[in-house]
Every structure is written in C-alpha cells, then in structure tokens.
Image (cartoon, rainbow, N blue to C red):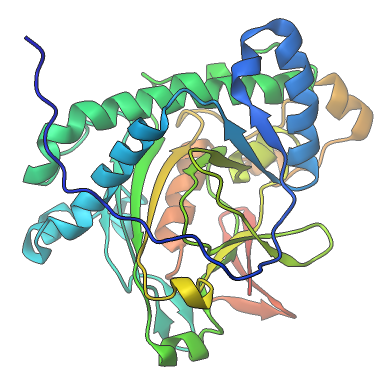
Length: 361
C-alpha cells in the first residue's frame, strides 16, 4: 500500500500583471534535447551565448510537470504561513556565526538603504535534508523536498554543467565532478516569501527590495512564478524585467562559476524591486535550488580549457589567495546585508577576503 501524500494548504499565486513592462530577451533552453550528444552540442552553443551575454536563460522540459511544480509551491509556503513565530525562533540559521543560510532567515535581517530593512523571509534546506532538524509541520514533507533536491541536482544542474563544460571544450563531466551530491557542501533548496512593504519604505529605498548583486555559488535554479519583481542588469547597463513563463526555470551563474570559468561565464547582476501596481498587494513566494561546488573545490579557473587558452583568463582572485568554495560561501553569507558598504560612484563595494563584492542600485 502506498503512503498517502500529506495534505498541504494550497498556495494561491497572484494573477499575472497587465502592466506593459520592458522584459529582457532571454534564451529558452529545452533540456529534453540534452539527452543526445548532438543535442548537447547544439544546446551548449545557446548556453554559452546566454552566459556570456544575457547571463540568464530559461529552462523548459526540466522533468517536473506543472502539477508537481504547483505542489512544490504549496510546500514552499508552509514554513511561512503554518509555523508560529515562536517555533521559527528554534530553527534560525546561524548566518553570521557559521556563514550558513540553513534554517530561517527572518525578515528585516538585511539592510537595504536609508535605514530600510528587508521584508523577505526564507527557509533553506541542505540537499541532505537530515543535516538538521526542521519545524514539525515540515517533517512529513521531507521525502518530497529530498526528491525535489535530487531532481534539481541530477536532472537539471548536472545537464547544465555538462553544457557549460562543452562550451569550454572540456570533458563533459568536468564541472559535474565538482558538484557531487554526496560530498560535503552547501547546495540547498530555498523556500522564500517576499511581503509587501509600506509606502514610506518604498520611497526611502527607491522601490528596491534587494540590491543588484551576484549569487555566491555556481548555478542558481529559480522556478518561475507570476509576481514580476526580478530584474537583470543587461550588457547595455539597463535594468530589464524577467518575464514569467509557466513551469519554466530561470537559470543564472554565480561567483563560483565565474571563477571556475576564468570569467568566461559571468556572474549575473540581478535585483528584486517592488512589483508593478496591479501586483503590489500580493506576497511573492519563491522556489530555488542554489548550487555550489563541493566545499573542498578551490575556485581556480579551469586553465586546461582550449577556449580559455585562446581568449584568456580573467581571475576573480589573486592566484596565491584563491579561496575554496567553503571559504567563499561562508565569508559572503556572513557578510551579506550586514556590512557597511563603500560608495564608488553609483556602485557600493565591500571587500571579502581576497575579493571585491559590488552592489548595484
């Protein structure tokens, strides 16, 4: 007899916006075509173009049906709407102490601008869901969350990593071998909820909910959702909206992949802003898989790449001070939204170890 699926209160998403927004023109990668060598060769060209130009791309046919994705959004809402504030305190992430987001990041933890703090709450779960305890209501849902983590890791992340390796004319498993599911590392499922803010906070922060930034890890997988708020900084210096595509993923590279690829695949600058007027009263639930290389991987460029040997390597770190993935993710996680930033023109900077992190507003 099969085990019944635990009942989860349905999450009702916002209706699509009717506002005419300027959307980024992002490529769409049909991941079902990555099953053959010829298909991977063709897809690799599109992915390389996306990662060296737009920095973002969509993935469709990733293996989850619309119904499965809807179920995961229902689950994503649970730790915010169905866990008491007192119980949440028992599962706070040790962000500054351990440089880890595992657990709850409470609202108002990040400083945004002019004294305004964030209104985003998230709950992060290591790909190994047994790493720590979870709120009572989430425990029956852990088998589904674990299956979701494995699906993203093996059926989405690994195929994308193979395409990126092909784009550098490297053996297909080059990056896959740096992202082993059973290794010590911090790749995780993140469940997120953005809450509407006051008019006063919107004015003080110029409608910015999260400043322009790059992600810490190698590859970020975001399941598309209908509230328009995500923007990407395009190569011509303009912020453009990322359009919702039903049951698609939005994919971008982070610091780790930029470092490993010798700057060939750029860490994408993106931000979150106030939604358009017809969506401003709605919360925004997010469903992510943040991938990082194994903790012991040093973020050295793959200099054996024939492509990098032709076009040159752009190092993010000094050669003798390159951090491991563990060192970099702990340092960046502990500092994010907490340190005093130095203004350099329109950009704000902070030094983390041997690297400079820029924030764009």
